[in-house]
Amino acid sequence: MISCDEAAVICNKNQYGEASFVDKLKFRFHVFLCKTCSVFTKKNTHLTTLCEKANLQGLSEQEKLRMKEQLQNKP
Amino acid sequence: MAALKFTEGTKNLQLIKSNSVTFDIQKKKMTAHQLQPNSWVDSYADYLFNYAVVRVSDAEIAKDLVQETFFAGLKSAKNYKGDAAERTWLIAILKRKVIDHYRKINSNKGKAEVRMKYSSSSDSEGDWLEQQVADPYSTLENSAIENEELGLAIHSCISKLPKKQAQVFKMKTIQGISTEDICNELDINPSNLWVMIHRARTALMGCLNENWY
Image (cartoon, rainbow over all chains, first blue to last red):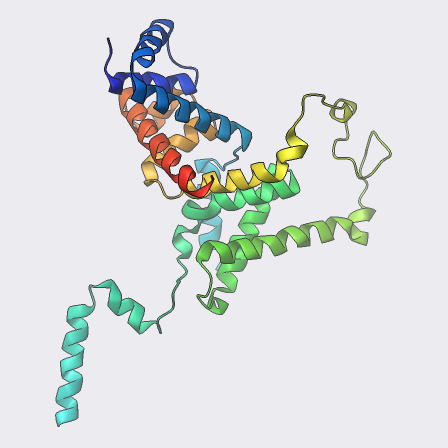
């Protein structure tokens, strides 16, 4: 039986599709027994769907750096 | 003489107080908000970009608009009265920039530019035939506005995170960079990364819980 902390890590990895098969099995077993982690998993998965739904867009660090440089050079 | 002593006294008092925040606020006529242009890009670039990109639906144009907003903000910083929060003020400028953008492309000069199109209808979004096929599974139109607000809500929640966590979360979730690459770039180990992701996600869940539902 894995601990809740380990389960949380696997759950997070799973949100990005990076959990291994064995990890997933361990995780399923844990969630089956642990109420708290089951709630956490539900919320976490919901957050992922929200992020996908919002179609988040962001600027990369390089682009931000270039912006900063231009801002400083302008005045 | 007494007055001189008194001013000396206040000077000393000010020296003592100069380290505290209250002194700065008193000096600047009690303005509620202040501009900090140096932190604009870090704090608001993503938020403004998200706002712009759903309105002009082109990442490059949106980027330019955000940049112009920062320039305009710097230029008119002295007109900032401190009534609104920094972000609200910048959004107001960006809103004007978006309007200006549409005005420009619809002006005579903009219309004179030759634009090649595959379809004759000018108001459709996609030019290519593939983009005009109706998508039977699309629910986007129904909740486009809601999703836009959701995006802004998520971004303002992200901006409340500690800088490092926000950076990792953005790289992983928004830009979809692989774990290995992030670890190499930021010089951290994977378990470190997952701890940061975990904290960021937990904080986001709480924040969205308060502000979105």
